[in-house]
Image (cartoon, rainbow, N blue to C red; front, side, top):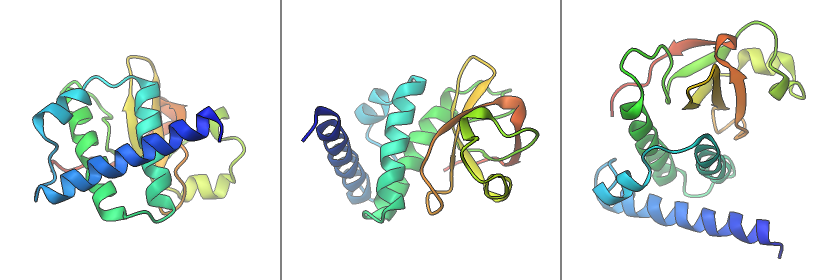
Length: 156
């Protein structure tokens, strides 16, 4: 087994373990220490976490606890976002304008019909989006002016 494959399996196991812990706690919130460990995620860290969790949900691993975990991590990111931000992690968006280069290999009709969830908002003019996990789990970095908010995530 290659090192990358091993790393992915370890991340999968850790995400499943954390999801099971959240699920057994009786509430949708992470323990204080876990929440603290997940603050101030970089773009690449967020992409690994949401990409691997999305992969597990997409392919049917115990989805309810993983979905709860995804929402808990998103809540941490939302709390860190500036109050006046027009787009925050967890918001549902759709693509507008020209298809971003990062999604050029996808069917344009599918892209236009797909609801994406914002997974990362950085200090640049780019955001990371991921489709509904029943559709796909890819995370793409797109210009913020190529997405239009559909709905803001409600507070957990």
